[in-house]
Image (cartoon, rainbow, N blue to C red; front, side):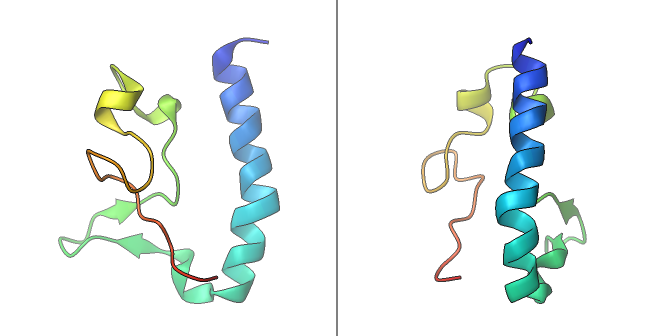
Length: 73
């Protein structure tokens, strides 16, 4: 299994085990939209980024500050 398959599999697991239960608790988080009306996915992975993943996306709370760290769920 290659990296792409492993990432896709892990993302699907994350959706099942974390995202869906979280959205049941906080349904208003179902759709993320910027102030410009651009839809935002709940999680971006290397599958969504061309080039260097760490440079372009990084981790939540770290430069380039592309990820949100939710407060208490």
